[in-house]
Length: 287
Image (cartoon, rainbow, N blue to C red; front, side):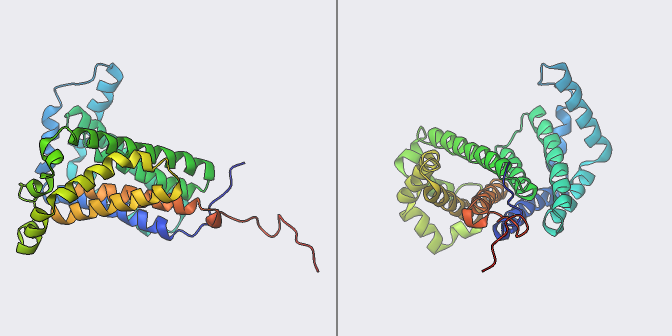
C-alpha cells in the first residue's frame, strides 16, 4: 500500500503554489489589461485544423463558450482560482481548485491548438498543477509517478531547445546573449551601461553555459538526487535571469513554477519527510 506523505512539511509546496499562482495571475491579468491580446483566437474559429469529428465538435463548443461568456469572465475566474490555490488551507478544497484549473487550461490549450498558437509553457503549467495536486493527495506512489512525468517533460523540452540552438550560428559562436540583449524583447535594464558591458563582454561564456545546461539537463536527471536538484536549481536561476532581462515573462514564470514544484516534490519524498506510523499502529513496550 502506498505510504502517505500528508505529514510532510509543506514549506517547499507553499513556494510551488505561490509561484504557480503568480504565473497564472500574471498571464490572465495581462489579458484583462488588454483583452484584445487573445480575442484574435476567435477569428480562427471557422478554420478547423482537426480531422477527428469529436475534436472538431469539442473545440467548436469551447469557442462558443468563450464567445458567450467572454474572455474577461474567463480570466477573472482564473484569477480567483489562482488566489484560491494559495489561500485555501484545506487540501480537499485545493484539489478541487486544481481540478478546475486543469480543465480550464485544457480548454485554453484546445483553443490555442485550434488557432495554431500553442505555447510550450502550457505543458509546464499542467505539470506544476499536477505535482501540487499529487502532494495534496498524499499518495507517495502518485507523487513519484507525477514527478517522473514532470522531469521527463523538462528533460525533453530542454533537449529539444538545446538541439535546435546548436544549429544556430549565434549560439555556436557565443553571440546569442549579446544579440538577445539588444533585441526587441530586451528590458530597459539591458541598456544600462554596466549591464550592457557585462552582457557584451561575457556573452560567449554565458551563451555556452546556457546551451550546455540545456543539453546536459536530461543526463543530470539520471545521475542521482543531488545532480537532479543541482540541474533544477541552476535552470531556475537561468530563468530568473531571463525574467529580469527579457520581456517574455510568461515562459520564465511558468518554468520557475515548474521547477519549484519539482523541488517541492523531491523534498516531500525525502525519507525524513515521509509520514511516520502513528503511535496507535506501533505499540512501543514500556520499560
